[in-house]
View 1 (tube, rainbow, N blue to C red):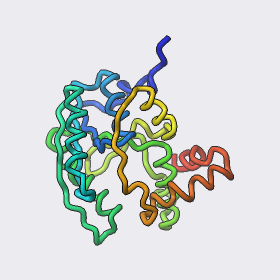
View 2 (view 1 turned 60 degrees about the vertical axis):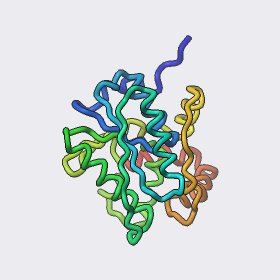
View 3 (view 1 turned 120 degrees about the horizontal axis):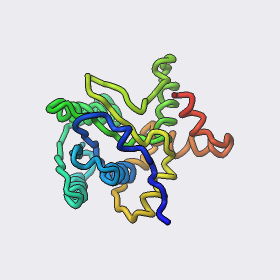
View 4 (view 1 turned 180 degrees about the vertical axis):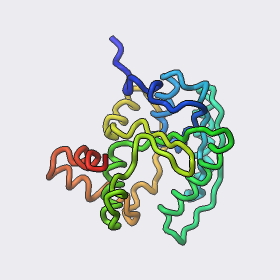
Length: 215
């Protein structure tokens, strides 16, 4: 008996009009790409890979992304950006990435899709809390919101990464691991690898509690 889809109503959740997936080639966006296609959203979907030029093999990574997307019969565009490291690598990469995505989406009013999940939400809440954000800032990410008049849809936001990884492995998907994700000099990585595991060990369901607080 086939398993029910990971997100049964994915097609019904989708914003109207063209859809633009931010595809890194990592686990989360690779799984989301296949979920969107399985939900019948392929005809409305195009894919953009942002090459931040921060890794020596970034060109190979981009080629991998193009190959995966082409195998599904979808258009894929690689956009190369220059990261302003004066703002910090994390902030600079994020700003360059969203500028490129929004510029592409504005051409036809597409909604940008990202693969943020529940673990990302917990990390974002903690980062904003430690930066001294107020109540509005602590609301962190939403399933659907608007930035610069562009809709941003995050269909995986309620799912833990462990469930995404299980689903990806069951499907036999291939993805790229960004080596910078292990660099704990970066604040988000430090939370991911050192702080959140300790919180989970002490408080069962810590990620769910943090995500619920963000909501």
